[in-house]
Image (tube, rainbow over all chains, first blue to last red; front, top):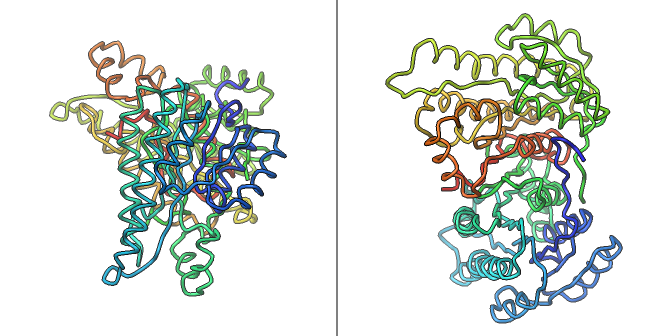
Length: 254
Length: 254
């Protein structure tokens, strides 16, 4: 037992991760499993859910998955209501379709709003209600936001609108859920190299723009973000709520 | 994916290490494996902290020094081989209503909370940059800020001015020191159970008001803050710079 250094672990806790099959969600699921947590993965690709199962089970924690689209409210609700344990939510599923403001298609706006705002809200509400119903103690919700929840980026008006929204939601939820000892925070990464952003980085100009905008002159890794998520999920962060941890190599400090 | 906080082979300097948050940070960093250099004006306090660190099998060196005495601080830096982490913590407060703030108190607070904080950060950065492999091994500077570096509060106008200033300093330093892979961040706690706050809490009305303003309904512990500091000191936060971790139980989310 340390005197002042709290241990970062989630032993005995159950974590639900949306968008768990790829990128940040997959990284968060593996990190939380490594930190001792049982994992509930939500994703849309069965073979990827199965491959995650193999990795997680090697870490000797429990694994359960739901093949479910977060836009499908009824199925989402039915799945979450079956849970007997739930302490941590990593509200991660999200998307982006970069377009200049003047040419944003109605279909893009609808799609991004549905996933990044409405589904994020629904997942958070369903999980919070389940945490309260199960009388869990010391729960933690982590909404995956972005530096574009803090500043704007080119061709990212809709994404910024949704991520600024997630920042507001995080603070509001933190106030409403404090009495249940459910903490709510967001993480705001810079543009991380993931399967979704790979195509952006393939553009040399874009890749240079990201590095040049990042004082540390490096790209944020999935592991950088997963470590912060694990810290917020653990009781080491038991007085952190209603705020964001920005992981951006200094992008927004400028 | 997941890394524990580990500061082995790192040297950390903590100012104001004799009491309260500085003491907690020094012990926490030692518990994470760092060699710790503890600075305080009070020899007796330093010996007590040194004893605790020794008991937890950590290693420390102590120097009696008033951080407003630049020459004395410089001579300490000359006695140490290298420096990887600075916890720029020494600071104080003298709450007064704005119209009644005594000139000597404004001077005293500003000299300690801003001028000394700046000087120490500059001297330590110069020392850190000396290491030829700095870019590879990185460095981390953590300023002890406050939630009052983010929001205002009655009778805290000078402290507000000082801590908002530190928030600016941290961002500026982060931009300039990124090229050396030295990260600069702040930790912004709410009221913490420290000797300083215990004194303020003799005022019952103030105590009630404070607790009412923290959605989680409790004060931060010294360990909560020290753990956030250790998280920022370690490679677990390798891409976090120019930002703050707010440890306030939701105070500033309102």
